[in-house]
Amino acid sequence: MFASGLTIDKYFLDFRLPLVGRSIFIGDVHGCGAELDTLLDRLAPTVADRIWFVGDLVARGPDSHRVVATARAIGARAVRGNHEERLVIVRRARAQGERGPRLSPGHEQVYASLDTEDWAWLEALPLWIDVPEHEVRVVHAGVVPGLPIFAQDREHLLHLRTILEDGTPSSRLRGRLWGESYHGPPHLVFGHNAITGLQLHPHATGLDSGCVYGGTLSAVVLPLGATLPAEVEDRRGLLVSVPARRAYVHVPSG
Image 1 (cartoon, rainbow, N blue to C red):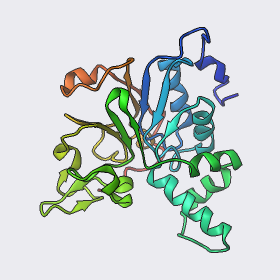
Image 2: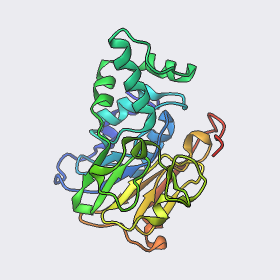
Image 3: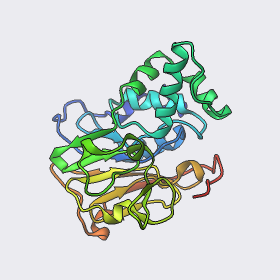
C-alpha cells in the first residue's frame, strides 16, 4: 500500500493485455514519492508497459525508500545515478569496517531508511541500459561525444554536464552541453542536469526537470516500436510531466 492509499494493482489494470506495450522513461525522482505516484496515475501503466528510470531515484526529497519500493514493485529498471553510487560505495566500505566517503545528514537518513531488498536492487543497477527496439540508450548524466560506451569514464556517465572549449569533459555548466555535440546513434535518454532542465537535443533527451527543486517530474513515452524523433516539437508530444508539490531543497549553483 502506497502512502497515497493506492495499491500496486491500480497501475496494472488489465492482465489480459498482451505483454507488449509502451516504453516509459522517467527523469530524476530524488525521493519525491508523492509526485511519482501522481505521474504513474497519469500514465496508468499496465503489465504490458515497461518502465525505465534515469537514476537518482533517491536523496534530497522526502521519501527515498518509498520511491525505490515503488520502482521495485512495478518491475521498473533503472541506471545508477551519482546519488545511488555514493550510497552504495559507503555501504560497501562500512561492511568492510571502513568509514568510506562522508555522507551528508540527508544522505545518512536515506541510508538508514533503505531495507535489504532496496539495497539489493540499488547495488545491481548498471551504468547504462540499451533499449534496441527504440534505438535508445539510458545513462544517468551523459557521455563524451565520439567515444564508444565501453570507453566512457565512469565519472562522466555519472556526473557529466558539459564539454569545455578545450574538449575537457566537465560536471559544471561552463562550456557546451554535451548533448549539443552528440550525434548518435543510439538516442540517449538521461537526467542529472536539473539546473538546465529538460533538454531536447536532436539525438539526446534530458529528463531532469527539477522536481525536487519545485519543478516537475517528467517522462517520455514511446509506443511499441517507435523511436524518438529528432524534431523537438514532435518529441514534446511524447512528454508527460506533473508539477512538484513544493520545493524540497534549494536549487544548487552550477
